[in-house]
Image 1 (cartoon, rainbow, N blue to C red):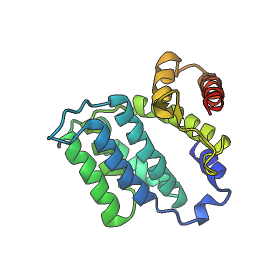
Image 2: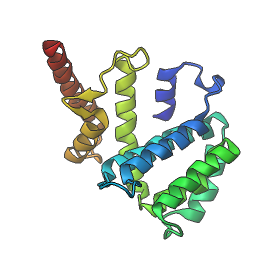
Image 3: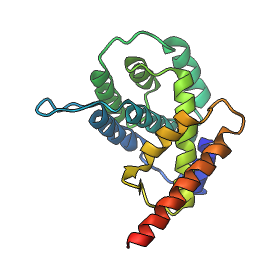
Length: 201
């Protein structure tokens, strides 16, 4: 799925030299905004969006590993060691450690990512379910003009990520036709949002 998405973005994505590490630390900042860190104002953690941001980090990290042909080696060693371990640091500290590791090495640190998962916690089943959903949304964005600036990211007053989280809860992610069902549901909501936007403009 990641290969298919990356090919949608650019047919020769492996040769483009994209700074995936930069995308990771920026996603870490977005993740902190969703969990809340401002002590001077009231904030409510949005765990659906927190999980989606972790999955966004995974998209970029997986792309980096794929580009280096290091997926099997990196994941086998780290996942065996860190799978579903109790957290050793708080969640915000795990987010900062993920960002720091990305900046320091300009690479993807699988161990830091697993620490981040464990600190929330986010299970591997949840990672898979949300990844499939977000990957489907990412492909939907690309097919509807995301790179050209034609895509509407806000539908009926809410970001598409919020619609995605709602739809993933409504559908059965274990169903063999989960992806086609999600594609149809996204298309229906998006068509309605575009029609509404065109009417008001």
